[in-house]
Length: 199
Image (cartoon, rainbow, N blue to C red; front, side, top):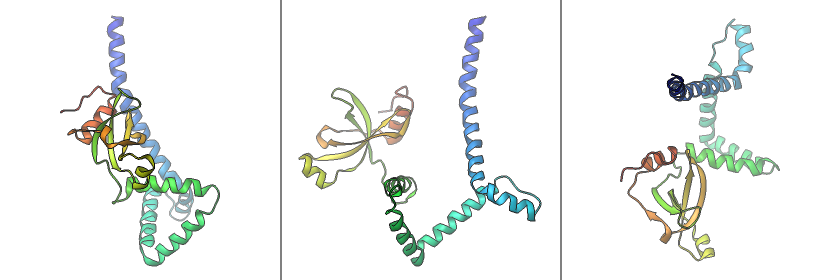
């Protein structure tokens, strides 16, 4: 009896926990996003309209971002943004942090962002140990000349997220090209190797 109860409890936990954590995270993100501007506009709405609609802070934030985007794409706005960015990059703390954040945001949201070109297999982190990687680009000619190797940039993911890992430069001759799709390789990484790719 106790064995069955334990089995049912573990099974229920495996079903309940991911769902509960996902819902909790969703509610937390919505609350946090709403609170960024909601804390400022809530007193205004309550004073002049007598009510405040939860989530209005998110809507105002989206409209504000659209307005910033429209302004930044215009000629005057682009010049202002360029001048502001140059000033920003002169500040001690911001010049180290801002470029990194700009690259990350650009990677995820830019239409011209680089993407994984191909799922490959590389010997990483050591010889005889094989890992899935994603071919991202050819290494710059300057780095090829410095190393004397025909290198390629490979992103080696770490479980359980295919978007965290290590960017490495590997000789092209040591990269095993595959016909495995990027989605299949990502499933392998997310599952910790439980789900094998279809080859």
